[in-house]
Image (cartoon, rainbow, N blue to C red; front, side, top):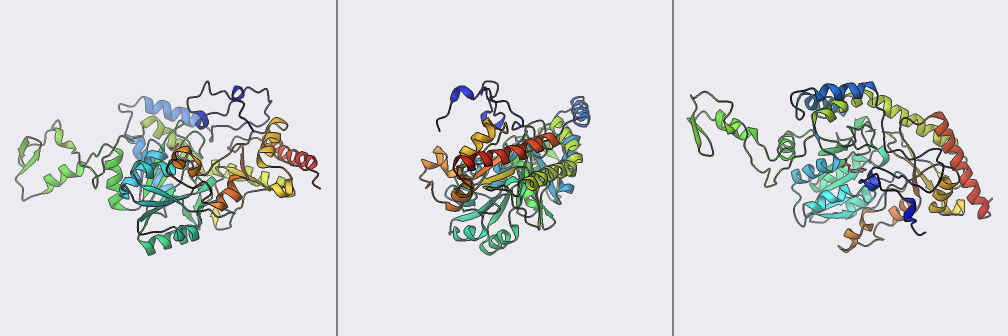
Length: 446
Ligand SMILES: Cc1ncc(COP(=O)(O)O)c(C=O)c1O
């Protein structure tokens, strides 16, 4: 179908698909797709105002508190706040020492950021196909794609349902590969009792507006249990700042002097606070850092959001289970799969259209659902290698047949956030039921 540009209003949104699906086509929506994935109230407002009164608005007590709370909640030794999940994954890509020509096995069923960070460092994303039930990367295909150049595996816990991590970690161990968990959808998710971001070598979370918790629209967190990575994250997140270098000089008792540039001091001299040597700058393993720090207002709001995380995820799950129960007997649409060993946080509620049973395509279904039933579904995602930039690099658009067949052609996401009301849930169930019935009738399906 041709895109009717007059109906898409990007006017108030520089973010395009990252901040709005506003339309002016006259459709009266019962359940619009919301770009606020959480619940804000007095707790967030008070936290933000209190942080705004602080002397320093970045890297202060609230960032420390947020990191500590996040690490405790996700069962990891270290958590470091950063500007977003993309920059978090960029830091991890540098820690994994991905260099030009190195291959990284990655899922195609993700936001472009997961591959972008590999491409930024000159690495080569190699796409493994997905499991048609979970829509997550398939460990069997991961192992098939390993070559002598493979350095890491990047998995995404799509929709908040965690990847089957045990086989992934076994493969990584067997072949000496690093594992990054893209946890953008998975704050609050777990696998066999282990939280997202605690199983791979490092994890990166997103607190974008749409996510399970949000730090004023943007934000991220890097998690790891690795002591060396902990130092590396601090370096790469903050301009290759290396406080340890100066401390090491001070600690060297055999050296009577310490040096910073042209300044030479005797160890017996008092340490003046204004000396520039309170930090040093050294690239981490040859990689230069950047400024990927989170500010104190975001961190304060993040603390308030973490206090609500269990409630927010419980609400998402309750809503998802109600929708699924209401759609069990509908021919032509399939509800999300939920294996017993995983705690699904339902960041997304993904419905699949079975074209054979329905008689019509996913796009026809979406159109009827939207125009006639007032329920705004959207698509998450097209395979990464379909983007022009990757096609120009020579990626075959048909290289992951299961992702195309069982996901890309069939999936749509219903509105999902914890503020949905009983009325919204009922409207969605009725909308899907009616849309399916109308299409089946149009195509003479029983
Ligand atoms: C799976 C996935 N990975 C990474 C990202 C990037 O997150 P951020 O916007 O925080 O950089 C997103 C954001 O939508 C995502 O959905």
